[in-house]
Image (tube, rainbow, N blue to C red; front, side, top):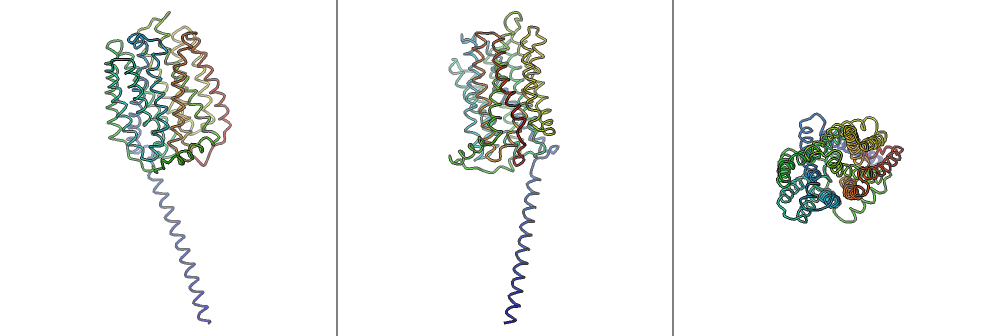
Length: 436
């Protein structure tokens, strides 16, 4: 009996020691796994970081060059197809509308099948449809190809932000998102600049075809150098799973307001650039199409502000700086209402600087607050962004028709005043540590 008791005690000690050892081993494995995941992040300054940012920079360049290259052509298209300004604006609005619809599809698809493959197909498709649009004989045909361009580009716009939030080290997200959006700004500027100048010397068809070839080259660079995903975790495409992610995003105290901000900010931005060309083509300016195309250099301020604002938001907090960028947009808009072209140019510079700073800040804020289905959250943000572009961009034509530039300015001012009020509300929002 005594021996049996001692054997039981020894057995219990042995089991306890075994459990302790197993617990220690499990804890050690968890620590090792955490270290591996930490090391797998792409660190700023590494060769992988350079390749990633170059790939996403080229993709952002191509995306926005293909999307906005038609904006300076709108007066030319009005003459070529005998349509008014509001109808001509559909060449951009239909792209952004289909892009918005595509956001709701491609984000969840990338959550299921992966990031790089979806983005690669998106760029190749958009380039091909742009080339096809250059040979379409009718206005309806041009609009169909522009709709397909927008639908294709949804596959990149919805996923690139998510790729950055997953693969770049969290402490470098703000500045990395800023660099990506800087590529967007360069693309938007280059698309407008190239087409705005070219269309004064060659046909709009040759101009559009040239932009399609540039997009194709950028797509091939992107496919070649973008590192594969390391932190991607497939998520079910089942309706219940998608609905759970959707409901979760709208229960968050900040995400729905950020989605609304994207609608207001992009609506304001596109409206200004859609109709400023019509103003400067008419009295008292009578500028040529090439000179108006050169005004796209104001995008240089956005290229700088997107990266600068990302770093500033990382240091000071997004809720502290976001509203100030919107206020800057309002100030820039006010200057465009004056007649001297120098004041108009300065106003456009400030407006563009503020827009890209605000967009960069909000984009990285989405990744910080979304705890699940991050691509879906990015898709909802960009869905609102491009719905704003389509609706406000076309509605601005009505204000132009009845009120000229003052009418357009009043319309944009209302959008920005609402955006500023929302920004001040977000300023009081507590930081969501769990999502950071």
